[in-house]
Length: 67
Image (tube, rainbow, N blue to C red; front, side, top):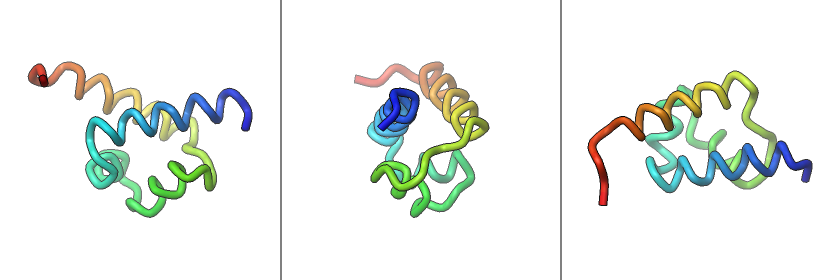
């Protein structure tokens, strides 16, 4: 797997841990099955999806502090 694909997958995995698969799919405006496919390495998130993911993570980071 190319390094850029590994990095995208890692970002998705981290976001899914923080938000959950369903919430992540909702915020990305894609079916949960697509997020699940990406997590299994079936296809990769697009550049525009990756940009949206970075915005989602920035919003999450600005939210209330979590323990």
